[in-house]
Image 1 (tube, rainbow, N blue to C red):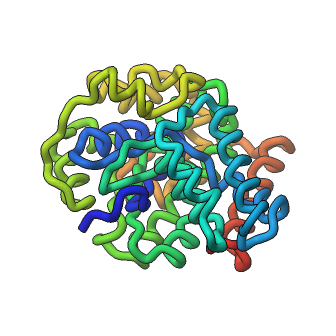
Image 2 (spheres, one colour):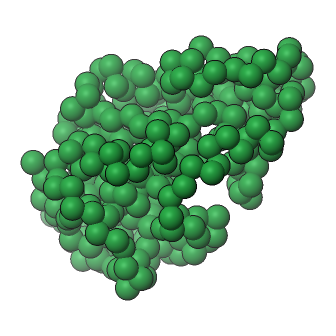
Length: 316
């Protein structure tokens, strides 16, 4: 059953450069479904807890809404449905982080019945979403971590440290397994990127069924994308995201990565890799991590554990 317009129905996540933008596009091609550009909202959530007094009301509510609007404008993400934000600013009741998040997504989208949001690293917050929003569905993408490392090296923000990337991928897959197990297949659909690009139609139909909409995809037109872009103009690496889907990059990591990089990723991720059918190539022993790599890994572990352990998140 579809939700009311402006109500968030599902989230898309996974390790960055795993194919989440492709899945976002496939969702937007379905009838009465939309997924706007990445909000990165929950990366702001911890700062918001200290910046504003929750639950938000009166002037604090209006200030928080204005803060969110500034964040969107800083990333060149257009707001085409501003009334959602205006209504939230004037709403005669107290609100929390979820209402801000939901209004932010709705303000970037056309009025559809099935509204989604895609920010890859929101995967760290899945337990909070599941706890506070029992209707929310999770649509996740998994990709070979060696291919993820190679792909991240091609974007300006990408993680080039194989130890840090492998640690992130490993944590994400463990979260996905927990999510799938605890909320069940009706609420969590996990797709392998490699399978998706090999048989796009079958997986597109599976996504439609998962979201509860008809499998009647329509190509996105330029006018629609100009009003409701799937990504910011500051993300030129996504320029081909609406073009032809091919499988040419599935194994390109074999030529892009050095043997030591492959060995590092495999030594860290092998148990989870095998669960998804990613076989090792046996590149020898991984070299020990240096101080910078150890620092990155430890920082990520601490942050990920902190997010999972939050018990006073002002969602409402």
